[in-house]
Image (cartoon, each protein chain N blue to C red):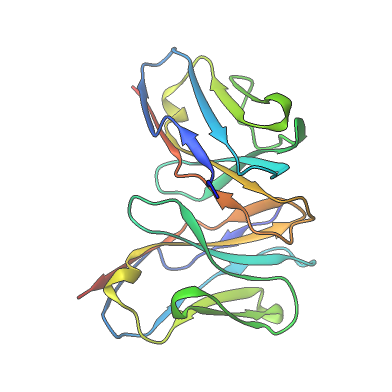
Length: 111
Length: 115
């Protein structure tokens, strides 16, 4: 079975700091990769996705992620975080139609 | 366009009771999924419907859990009888037909507390 590891469980940053959240997955075949975000009191929303092509993927709100196949990684980045980025972030992998999620990273941005 | 809706948003029940969770997917989405998150751990797959058929129910914890999808529209997840370890947030998601190359749209979840 596939698994997804998110190394940072809780990250605290000040506004304007740079962000990188790690994500590694275990499956060696063809996968589709996603980052979802859950803002306080809201549902999970898609930040960005990678299916194929350019391994550097740009998403909403200035987020981007880089797929490195040799490292089985799909790390999420943002050059300058804002207070409104405070949320929980989930990395996910799909093989066919089943999503496998990491345990989530809580990001707390201090104003 | 309406999103995925789940009802109720919260439920507190006693051990041994029955609870039924409901999910209304986005109209036209053949794929419907149930997931569960327990105590801040990872979001775990429970099962997957394609229209009214169960495509994959490998994540269902045991036979106390029963999922149905009447007519390929809304879905229910019944827990009977509920146990303490069933507490958690139950998410429903739906997506367009496709082999994984589509995003899943999630509901807000139902927080189930078994006391």
